[in-house]
Length: 139
Image (cartoon, rainbow, N blue to C red; front, side):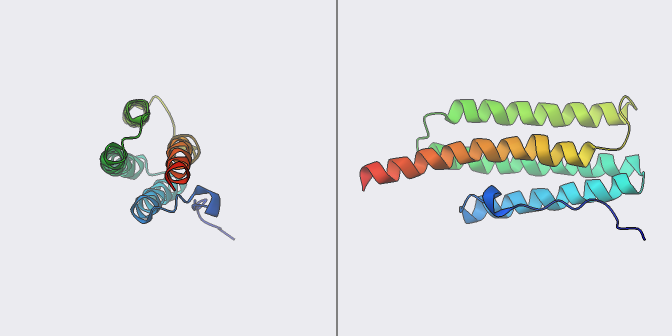
């Protein structure tokens, strides 16, 4: 029986508690699942299309997040933004390598979920810890 592609999902520990950020993270996971489905079908063109969509969605998410960090005067905002830029560069490298047949299908969705999105969420949690500490100190 074909079980289909591995489906990725946010776990409760991955949720930030910030409604907009969590919704955007969920949208990113939806695109990653499309990448996984295309990988399962061995459709490199479709994987590339979804990978580029993921990059665009992630870049938009990063813009929203950086605006939010700026509004709250997050002291590590520049380092956070630098990490965002590095993540987009890594994603573009993966897309370029796939387009140039340097890498094969298999593992791209997993890398997007565990390496890219997972690291992004870790950085977000650092911000949220800072924000909670700031609220406790003020309260």
